[in-house]
Image (tube, rainbow, N blue to C red; front, side, top):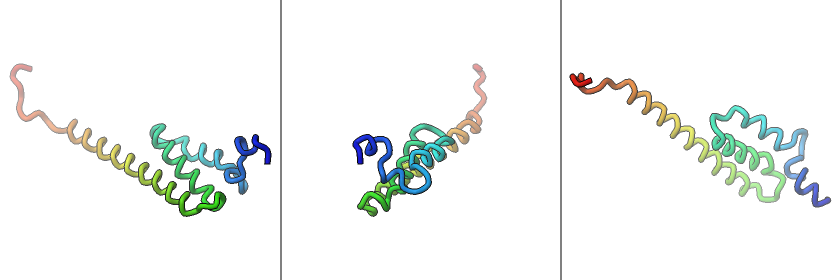
Length: 99
């Protein structure tokens, strides 16, 4: 295999009918923010190549690490949004006669 192929078309990303980069780009295009897209992309990267690099368990553990981080991020954002909504809807404790 030529050096170019290791950079442009490595076997562990091009096995099967679709290149991993194409699957990942399609999957992350609707992510709510770049960091979430990155985390999902890395999750997919490790899952898509799990059987091809020789250390399946390590790749699956890496995928789980990125997926857990993505879930934590999305749950934190959801909780922050809920908190902001609750705070916004709370009336002031009393009418301020100076306003």
